[in-house]
Image 1 (spheres, one colour):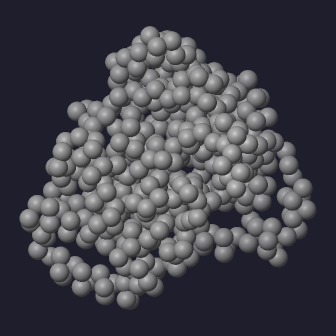
Image 2: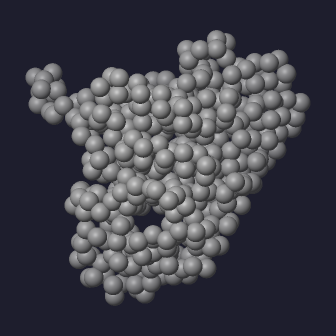
Image 3: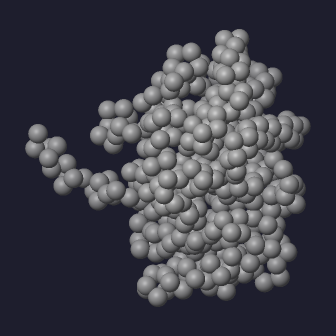
Length: 485
């Protein structure tokens, strides 16, 4: 008993502090789903997970490739002859064929307009590990990075928890579709300096999480100009680069650097991953690509704490080196994302729910300001609790993303099948109809069609959508961190 009472005294400050960020609505929504997950037949009244940015729309293509390429795995009769080599490989640099394949894939995703040097690729355990690795390379405890808001809630965990760095929001607003302006960057930088905070850099996400938008070339040039002038680092999180499904096309910071005459390349670093673009978060493939030689050298040493398994490297080297497959996959993924995004947002438009215009990502930024009882963040949270507890949808409130305006919610749309999407739409439209006193006329017919669809569907994957599966990063069910919501 004494051990339990004094546990904090026996553990480190990092282990016991509250900087993980788990005590936020972003993670609370996942816990609500974990305790009552939706299933079309076993639990049709459960919570639908719309707070998890996973890309499950093209698994069939990768599964087909695996069946046609058994040599890619050392666990097959065709590939087992490579077992000893792969099982013994432990070079921090990674398999040469893996680094070459990743470099070529990154170039393809950017339309072949830039080339990447395989020798500058550093591995890490997913984008989470890659983000932390770059922060350990660039910042000391107490140093700060500017970050445009709204931004990914888990940046607090990824960038600050163990590094003890800090984030300073750069406020962006809906009046210009949350565009990053030079004025906003200057204002946040000035306030930080006035507070005697050492600003080491700026981190941006392009495409944006949670907005689902891409940054245009002129804005990127302005951002690069800003960091050059201040002599601070620029970390570009580009993990959604291949999720762009309509114009304008994606522009990488690597392209902008080529066009700028005076650019301090050694200040620029790219974070990449295969979790979103290929839909492989479980493979834990994170990449740091730095133009700074010292970062590459020190980062490679640090990467020893989170290397990608050699078996995973071996498989992905074969997959990504299949140029015909990669071209076909990227085109089809964009087509399916566009179709899903359009189906969902048009369904919302029928009950006058608007979203920020977007062209990328696995989510959209939904505007529910009109449903707030109070135009405050307290009002936003009140509505969110209703959506979680009564409508049974896990969407993420804008305040969790440090959005400066109440009433915005992130909705993920690529982590479920078509039938579940229609259930979610039905619930949202029924709720809005109840709130506004205008129930959708076709609701009764829609419910009937959905029941028929689920009874006949053979596409529902019991393994992927099992009610016993937990969301990633969630605490175990018995953990004291799991709270009723």
